[in-house]
Structure formats: structure tokens, C-alpha cells
Length: 275
Image 1 (spheres, helix red, strand yellow):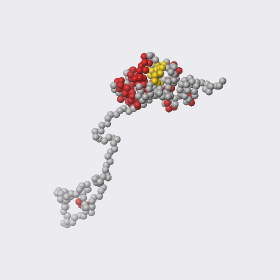
Image 2: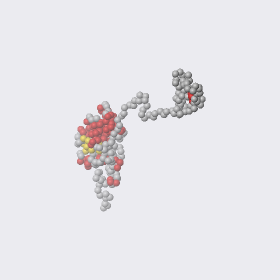
Image 3: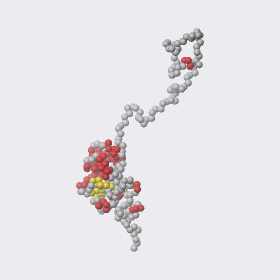
Image 4: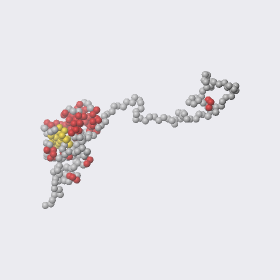
């Protein structure tokens, strides 16, 4: 009898495939998450408990561990990224799945309706996407706003404390703000720094003055209409009649001490030259 190529099955899905080398299981599609899907936060095999004995949040890797899910009593799974080829429903015979359309706009109402039915049936449910950091946390946050009556900031903080790897994108955060406005009729814009996004600034009012970022007008030093202080005086103006910084003046101005003839003590009328 030929010996199996691999003696021990995969510890996650129970099938025989080289999961350490990244090989995808040909039966269920299980694989080890790539390095780009992991972050500095320790990745747990168990999903994050959002509401004890009811609501759990995780990644595709968490959803692929059927035995661990069964030990926690989870019987239903909400798949937010079902259309992604590597994020399929693995155990249809063991769990009840509900898949959301993979659109840019998250269907919060459809997801909340499914979660409310799970709560009514007292069934434990796992909400997951591929990494469990963006889309599936947004679904859980929207559910907390609708069911608990919490605002967006409080719901986000509740989820973030129980799953530190949550990293909402700006587009998903904007959708949550729109859903908050739909529920409460207003948006708490002061909570934007909590998500790492800058709050919307006030409208710019300049009153006609240039803004700080506007470039200041450059002085027209080379303009022919502006007379330079260093320009030489025209040759037809004698030094005795030239006054720096002003035009020509009349010599007959009365009362000017500079135009008065000072008597010569020698009696001669010889004037000093202009040199």
C-alpha cells in the first residue's frame, strides 16, 4: 500500500494539503493568510467577542476554523465578502450562511435585519470579511448604532477596544456617518479625530485680503514707470539747482535761508563755485 504523501491533516480544515507552504486546499479552499493580511497586532485563532454569547467579529481565517467556531457555539455566519474567490463559505452543512453583495456601498439595513433575526432566535453569529479590519467591523458598528442606540463614536470605540486591529477606511467611515445621520438626523463631526481623519474645516472667509498661501505680488523694480533712486540725474540739470528727492525749485522763494545772499566780509561779490 502506498504511503500517504502527508500523514497529518491540516489542523484547521482537517483535509490533506501543504498549508505551511501556502497551498490552497482543493476540497474546501482553506489557506494560510498571506503576510500582507497580518499586522503587528497578534492574530488570534478565535474571533473577537463583541457581545457575549451572541455577536462575534473576525476574519476569513477565523471563519475557516470550524471546530473552534463550534466550541464557541457559533451556528450562523454573516459573510461580507462572499464574492471574493478566496473568501468562500466553507462549511455549508455545518453553519447557516448569509452573504452580502460585494458592493462599494455596504448594505447596512440588510445586514442588521439578519443580525436581529439571529438575536431573536438566540443564535450566535460570526460577522467576517477577508481581514476583519474594515468592512465587517463597519457592519457591526452599524448594528450597535441601530440596536443599542449608540452614536458612531461610541460604537466604534466599543468595537476597537475588543478588536484592536480594526482600521476603517475613509470611504467606509463616510458611509457610517451617513447611516448615523439616517438614524439620528445629525452627525457628530467632532468625533472624526477618533477615527484618524481630520474634522471638516470651516468655510474660508478672506474679506478680500490675500490668503496666507497666496503668493505676494512682486514689486515692479524693473518697470519703466518707476524711477530708481540710484538713477543718474539728467545732464541738463546743474548741481546748484538739483535737489535730491524733489524736482526743481524756484530761486526766488522768499524766506528761505538757503537762497539768501550772505554778505561777504571782504566786500567782494565773488560767489563760490558748485564744485
